[in-house]
Image (cartoon, rainbow, N blue to C red; front, side):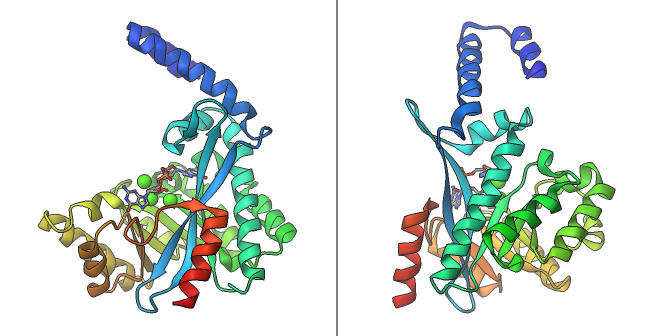
Length: 278
Ligand code: C2E
Ligand code: CA
Ligand code: CA
Ligand code: CA
């Protein structure tokens, strides 16, 4: 918060002043959001392209603000990340995601994974203990929890990252690299970290059918993943052309609006029941 304060005064303008106030209010509201039950997880299905059915869901955080309506994580996660507030929120996300996945498990969806996004600040030496406790308390089998990490998060402190990943892997969690291809220019970390899968960033998928370079990049990521015996997921798949491209190139799974948007837990359960009947 200190950092931003300074910047705001440096580039002072009436408009920014208004935004600074907006931020201040949001920030203090965010500190109460958990206690007020204003945070909610949405779930977006992930489809296995070979089997054609739902194999998992990514948990995506929403803030149902009392007066401002629903606020995007793009807005409030960076605010939460400025302080240890992200530890409380991130811990809640892990618990809530596992709790829901355990319910799906109890409803007979015994192989359904849940994927949770992690912030850099959560990536501390106590993370494996937190995850182990939540798995124990919710009774969710460890292999059904997937943790999404970014390249930059891993490369900030690679030694610590390796220790933490090894512990999470020992617990049995799935580990994936989110936004793959956008973060770090070296691929050598793929050799050193116990990663299970790569998520192809939406920026490569978006213009797939108009920009031949993107098609080349996506094909290369799929080949790289399979060469390293990693699973690969394409995110942000919006059109049937993109869907078909991924299927033909042997991408393992997709996630995107072409299948379904992120939805509240109740809707997700109904979605599961509906897709099972088909
Ligand atoms: P992300 O992890 O890359 O999540 C994917 C984002 O793409 C989500 O946005 C999702 O709703 C959106 N998306 C999925 N399919 C499509 C598609 O076909 N087209 C388009 N245009 N978008 C699609 P969302 O839910 O707004 O989340 C934005 C970001 O906020 C996430 O990006 C993630 O970085 C962060 N985030 C969300 N929930 C959490 C959380 O619980 N913890 C942390 N640390 N970050 C979170
Ligand atoms: Ca993600
Ligand atoms: Ca992503
Ligand atoms: Ca992203």
